[in-house]
Each structure stands twice: as structure tokens, then as C-alpha cells.
Image (tube, rainbow, N blue to C red):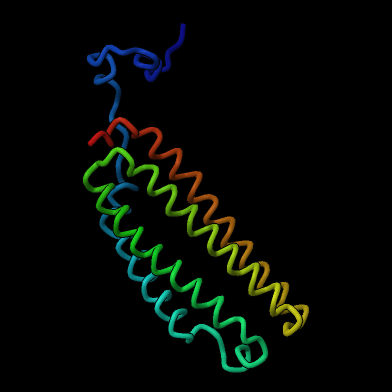
Amino acid sequence: MNNNPFDNYRGTNDQSIRDNRPDLPMNWYKFLIWIALWISAAVNIMFGVQYISGGAQTEEMLAAFPILSTIDLFYGVLTVGMGVLALFTRFALANYKKNAPKLIVGLYAYGLVISLGYNAVVLGITSSAYEPVDLIITMMSVGTSVIINAIFVGCNYVYFKKRKRLFNK
């Protein structure tokens, strides 16, 4: 005999059985819509504007590697886009839109991809300017960022997959 209470509704189309399942906590959801996504939007837009305006690199780095200004401009536009996507995602989540769980997972995946791509390109171009110890520290920082973003992608995927039935508008 299986004593798992969640098996009582799995695979059934009977809405009365499905509605009797225990409610899942929504604390992470509330944190996302009231705090995290607002901060994410503000920070991404602020840093994106900094990259677009050319304030992300030192003058020495830009003099040694002029291509960095073009790369920073492109990355700045992508970062501002991530800020706008964070706001769009926030409102989709708050309104329980059907695609909202995919948007939050996509938002973190997008951040992971553009961050990894930007850092790989910049490190590839500027690695000759680093001392070996500085290069290792920078690569460890990038690796940590990638791992954290990957964890956010996975955790949000699992979290919102369990709550998929709530997002039906």
C-alpha cells in the first residue's frame, strides 16, 4: 500500500480529487514578485546603462583593448533587456499567467547565458593583461556566478513545475 498523499490525484482527471491535495507554500513566489524581480530589474537596467555609456572598463583596459567598448555596448543592451524582462516576468507571475513559470526560468537562463558569454569573450581578449593569480581569481568568480545561476534555473524550474496548476490565466 502506498501512503504517499500526492498519489491520490496523480494521473486523474477528476477535479474533486485534484482539489483535495495539500496546498504548497508560496513564500518564494511572494519574494520574487514583491522584492527580487523589482531589484533585479533596477540593478540590470542600472548596470546595463553603465555598460552602454562606457563606464564599465578602465581607460587603461579600453586603450589596450579597444574592442571592449563594442562588447560592453552589446552586453549593456542585453542587460537592459534582462531588466525589462524581469519586470515583464514579475507582472506575469503576479497575474498567474500561464507562461509565467517559463518566463522566470527563462529569465535566469538568459542571465546565465549572457553573463557566461560576456565573461568568456572578455577573458579571452584580456587574459594576456592579467597576472596568473588574478586570472585564476577572475575565473573562479565567473565559475561561481555560473554555478549560482544554474542552481537558480534548476530550483525555479522544480518550484514552479509543482505549482503549474496555479498559473492558468
